[in-house]
Amino acid sequence: MSLRERSRQLVESRAFQYFITAVILGNAATLGLETSPVLHERYGTALHVIDVSALTIFVVELLLRLFVHGLRFFRDPWNVFDLAIVSVALAPASSAFTVLRAMRILRVLRLVSVVPSMRRVVSALLTAMPGMVSIAGLLVLVLYVAGVMATKLFAHTAPEWFGSLGQSIFTLFQIMTGDSWSEVAREVMAKQPLAWIFFIGFLVVSAFTVLNLFIAVAVSAMEAEHRAEESAAESAAESAAESAAESASAADAASVPAQDRAVLAEVRALRAELRELREELKEREPV
Image (cartoon, rainbow, N blue to C red):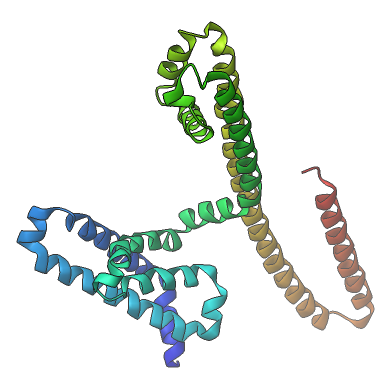
C-alpha cells in the first residue's frame, strides 16, 4: 500500500475525525480562557503552548489532506474554508495584524466543516441565500417607506426619535426588533393619539410578516436539502442492487442453455422500462 493510500485511510478514518473535533473544542476552550486576565497571567504560558499545538495539528491535517487529494483539494468549498480559517491564525503577532490575531477564534468555526449535521445546515442556508436576499430587499424597502412616513408624521412630535430620515429608520428598526417599542409609541401617542395605527401596522408588516419569511425560506431550504440527501441515498442503494442483480443475471446466463438467454434479455429490457417509468413518475410528482 502506497503512502498516499495510507494517508487517505488516516484522514478519512472516524477516529481521526473525532480527534480533530476534540482538538477544535479544546482550542475553543483555550481561546476563551485567554480572555480572563487572571487566568492569562497565571497560566498564560500553558495556554499559549496548547494554542500553538492545536494550530500545528490543524496545519498538519491540512497538509495531509492536500497530499491525499492534490489539486482536487481546492474543488471542495469546505477545504477552502478550512484553509482560510487556519491561514488567518498563522498571521504574525505584530501590531499591523492585531485584528487578524484577534480572529483566531474563527478556528472554532472549523467545527462546522467537521460535523456533518452542521455542514448540512450551512449548505441549506447557502442554498436559501437568493430567497433571503430578496426578502432582505423587501425589508429594506418597507423600512425606507415607513421611515419617510414617520419623519413627515412625527418629526415635530418626537424629534429625538424621528427628527431625520436616519433617526426614523433606526427607531423603526428598534421597534421591529421589539426593543422598548411601546415606550416610543406611547410618547408619540401622548401628542398624536392616532399614531397607534402607524406603529401597529408597521409591526404587523415587518416583524410578523417579513421576518417570518426568513424562517420559512430557511426551513424550506433545509427540507429540500434533506430530500436531496434521501434521494441520493436511495439512488445509490438502487444502483448497488441493480449491479448485484446484473451480475447474478450474467452468471445465470452463462450457465443456462442458449434458448433461455433470449428470455433473460427480455427480462432485462422489462426492468429497464420499469426503471424509466419510475423516473418519469417521480418527475411528474408535484413539488
